[in-house]
Amino acid sequence: MRNFLKILICVAAVSVGARSASAQSYRVIVNASNSSRSLSTEELQRVYLKKLTSWKDGSTVAVVDQGPKSPVRAAFSTDVLGRDVPSMKNYWQQSLFAGRGVPPIEQPSDAQVAAFVAANPNAIGYVSASATLPEGVRVLEITR
Image (spheres, rainbow, N blue to C red):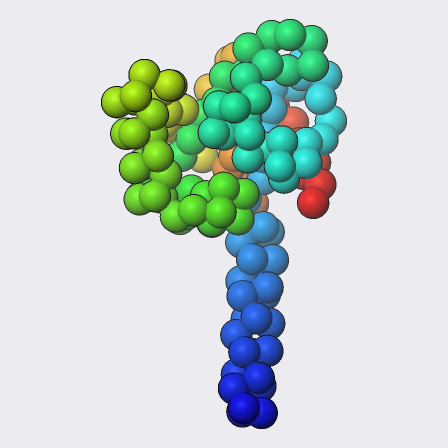
């Protein structure tokens, strides 16, 4: 029993470390004209599940996702949405079939996500932590 507890503690520590590492591997960005400065992880999750569809000023949120094979999407999906990419694909297939909603727009690279956000005042997206950000976007603080 004692060995089991030691193993359980080690697994928990590794999981927490992995989650922290993934949180550092991406940045959430919005258009520079967006008045929001921060979102909680829960609010961000609701935005990406399209359960929160408007900004505080009433404008419709334009959500953009990375491509399905992107490592940054895998990290974001696990960390923020609590699901892996295939599970999210399934979620959106079910939503489409039930007529409840459509998935976020997908862009294949950090540069294209950033360009989309820069060109759309209501957009939100995420890019790798090392991505070069163009003028017209700003990093949004995510609170836990």
